[in-house]
Image (cartoon, rainbow, N blue to C red; front, side, top):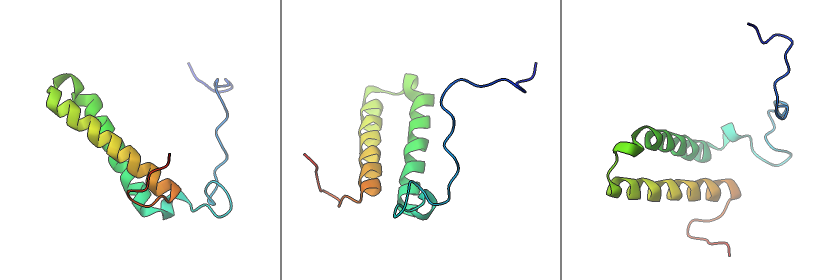
Length: 88
């Protein structure tokens, strides 16, 4: 069976743009630190997904802490927040 002529459900994909999210917003490929942290976040998440059932409680705790730290780094790099700066 082929999918030709069938419409997939869900929202339409956003049009490709080399300008990022809008004027003044750098394209993700130009923000190397953010790209590196995102790659590390994805890699860590995939490792957790593969190994979670075999991990000890201490390994799971460390994995969760690292995941939270990586998510914080992604937020900091994407918003331009300085290290150690906290929004309340």
